[in-house]
Amino acid sequence: MDTTPRTERYHLVCRECPLERLYDVATDADALSRDHVAATGHRVVVDRIA
Image (cartoon, rainbow, N blue to C red):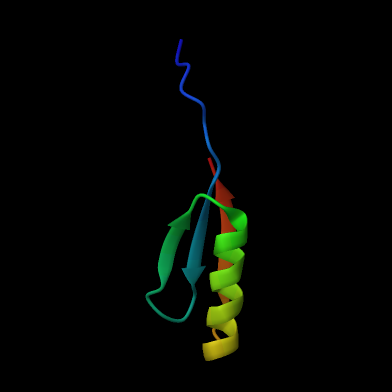
């Protein structure tokens, strides 16, 4: 049995440029998303992944 704890990760993708990142903390992903949208007006998606 695998006893390795699973951690949530957050995948950030910009729909209009090559920005794509993985984060371990949701607030970090949300902060970059807000900053990128404010600076560029691009559409950004942040999803939780297992």
